[in-house]
Length: 437
Image (tube, rainbow, N blue to C red; front, side, top):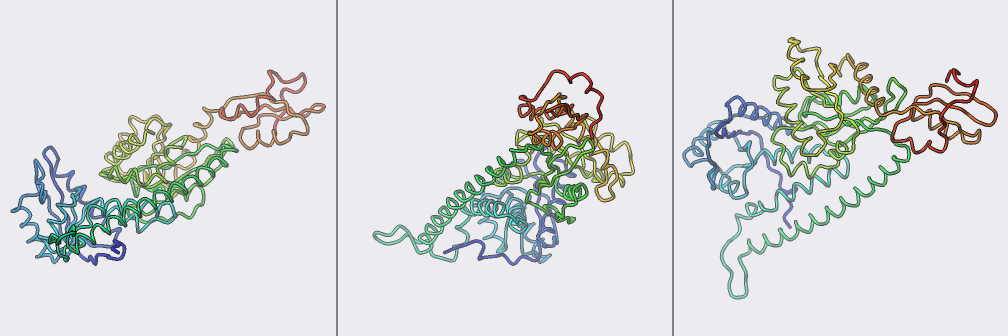
């Protein structure tokens, strides 16, 4: 039975093709090709050439006109390329036509990203999601795997030749795999939901690190928490969400989650397929939008990230714009321009630690806005209430009178209901002014 994982392409030299549609600038198209070249580098495949074709409307058979296609193939042969990579989505029919014409591997940006995700995914959920996306992508493209088999119409009582029968069997098998993976994913997500509810017994706010891929999110998580998340100078170095706990300057705790990096032209199907990491973004209380401030296209990266956040319906969450690598930015005005329309902006260097104290202070301020001050009276045998106040709040004073423990405490608004039975209007005479620990 046909399995795409058992038929790896032996690709050694890639040739990139970008499309400049009407209204696109040459610089923007070249920048996208630069990024595609980085994606190929992540796969370990060198790029030997590239070309940009101007188009006002795509041709149904090859996207490009026949003459332009031949010119590109001549260049591929001259450079001995063995893989043609389009920066645009290529339909199954167009892909088959190009492979028949070129006699080489032909893929698009979507397949490149899928291959990277398949290579990098670590957790079972991420691997399942990657496999699901690959199968759904490959299903309409199975026919090109069987071009060596006959396509003749069968005799009486037969629906087709050996190739057609095998194709139907493979399509049915892949649909079964897709259904099985979806079922298994639902079970994995259910278990994760139960774990999240258990974590909710002791609610701790979550801040998600979001931003363009390779902006330094994992480096920042490591710097703030001491985590050992993989850090490489490649796109999509890490795919699986990693969560660590940190203590803020106001003694409050917060969970910090690293998420998959965003990218321009991220196919919508991939956003849907990789909800394991993106779900952490939707469930987060705050967002830390990390930007490589030294990148010449930093503004474009910010807009690309915002576009995905908007697609996820999380664009209105409290957000801190974190300008990473600010120490290597020569023009100060460039930093000011990046954070012009943001409520909270901080300049840092995750590599050197510069600015991390200011970032933590901003996070503490966000938490502080969601705090309320209460006066509590807890019985001596309910020290669990006192312990909860210390753990989840900021105790301003603590005193003992008779059979009660009196507290002045700042508590997260979300936890106020846990203290309602112990809330009082004022401290008793003689207690006010006592210092807490």
